[in-house]
Image (tube, rainbow over all chains, first blue to last red; front, top):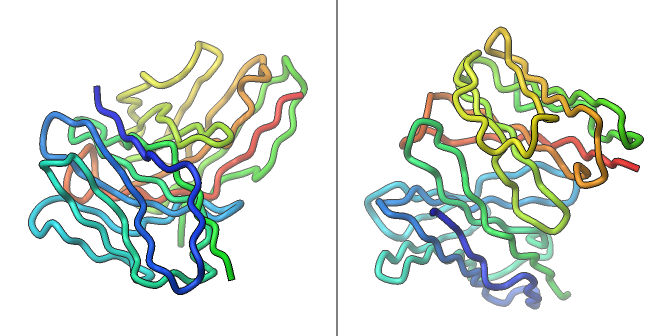
Length: 114
Length: 117
């Protein structure tokens, strides 16, 4: 069965420091991979996506992610974190079938220290 | 519309009451999804519509949950005889095309937070 694992439930970084959020997936075929961000009381906003091609993808707000098939990973990175990045981050794999439903990880809560 | 709209934003129900949650997808979007997000968890798929057809309802937790999209636009998720374990945020998402694939980017509403007392 398809699944997504985000090993870190909570991460705290200092403002200006670099960030890496981990995501591992289990999927039989080439996955469609997504990172979403959710601020309190808000819906999910798409940060970036990977469908095929270049394994390093750029997203909004200065985020990037790298697809590594050999490690079944799709880690999210940002070189310098801003206080406004504090939120919950979800990695998801899309089912490339009849529905395209998303399977989400548990999420990682990012706290940014001043 | 500009985005996916959900109403109400908050709903408090007494155990045993029926509730109805509404989703207005982005105009022209073919696909519509409902997800349930329990506290501290990632969203979990409930059901999928392609236009007015409900093609997948494998995620609905019980027969107390029912969803419809009669004209292929607005959708309603109904929960009958609510129970405390139904307390969660219910998210609606829409996408431009049908099914999975390169263009199936889902846009989410802000959700309805349901609290069952």
